[in-house]
Length: 240
Image 1 (cartoon, rainbow, N blue to C red):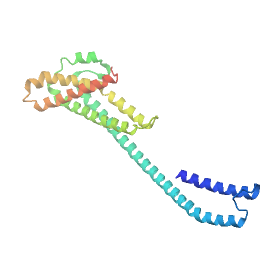
Image 2 (cartoon, one colour):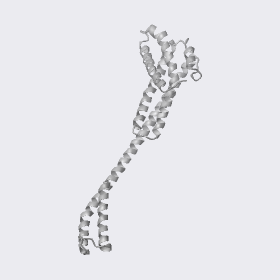
Image 3 (cartoon, one colour):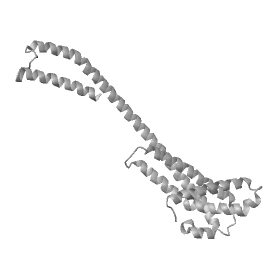
Image 4 (cartoon, one colour):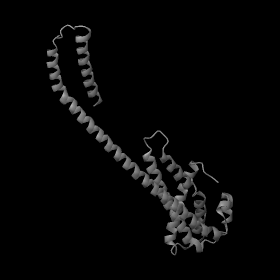
């Protein structure tokens, strides 16, 4: 479109320049000196080029409308994306709060405080815990952590798709930072639940598999998930 405008503009400039040179500066060979001839040529040119310029103007307006429509669509898509990301973030944050709440009764039962306990102390202090009465609580806490992982992966996947072709900093990087930081916050709680799950499997479930068949499956799913999480956190260079 722009090239066509350039060509038409160049033609108009050439014609006007020739007319100015012919009648003001110097007579050019092969060009008429009779203004009526130039008038006739002008009528011919206007009749020929006028519709062309009008058509180009129509194409320009149509292209402008198309660009405006594309801009509106992109703005709507961006708004929908932002709303979707915010909903996922809210869900992720709610799961984080629920997971922490589910761990608190277990902390109280085991008489420990995760915020004040190191990894080495955590393993030692849970040695004598009787997991028989808290198996269901362990499973519930494990389910919440697995749900948080599912939301985290979808959250991160959506963010990475959205910034795939962007080379500059953008608000989506903030979402990514929130997602990664929040997921990191699950590490100690997940380790705590994993130690209890392994202990419950060893001390209670495996010895009574017929009675605890469902619990056996649930606990195995969680411990397998934790092994995957631990590798991921190690790659991120996390620790406490």
